[in-house]
Image (cartoon, rainbow, N blue to C red; front, side, top):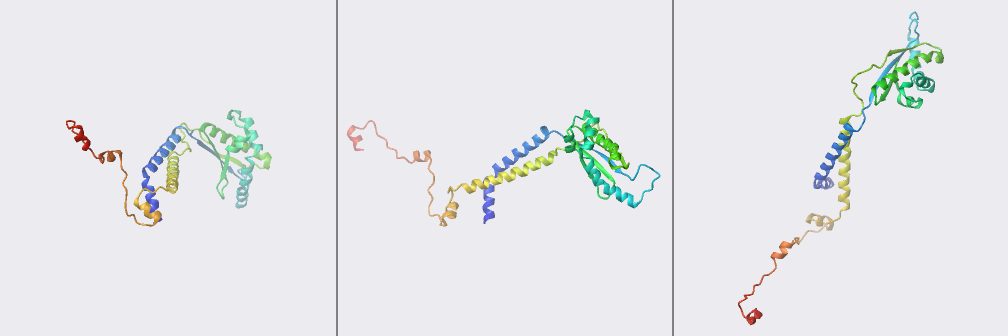
Length: 246
């Protein structure tokens, strides 16, 4: 019975819900398309090798050591020791050390010797230049820090004439607006119905008083009241006495 009551509440104000959802969905889609700036992503990959000497033989132990070094390198690359050098050598990026540390993300796949530098920015050109700059500085600075020369840039971020933004996702934003507005509108309807204790129908009387309805007094309009008044006419040709008797 409660589910039926909830269904009746929703059906009673379904047009309000649909109107609110439509306006909110269109508004979120419009805002996403025309007001949210597109964000682009650029990435550069670094591989950790045993050595740059081609005469050195690779073995399972050296590869395993390089894989374990990945976590150390991921921490080193996001320190001021690297970022300060990037800011100093590439002033055209117009980024501070703190901004670089916040924007640059470093990831790696388990049991691989590859690290990926990722940056998202409203300018794809600046994002590509930044990850390439960080990769170059890291490669140059890691030998004196770790006393090893085992970092090679696998591939740099390429300049793309028409890059595709990774954000915003217009369809996802519209769907989120639709779902949130639907939940809010339904919740508001339930609150309104819960706060409204007005008795309007016979079903409301039976629900509140648990008694059957014996009679119903219909609402009378002004037209109904005017049509129910008795009319009397007086013949103006009659004498005053006759009119008085009438």
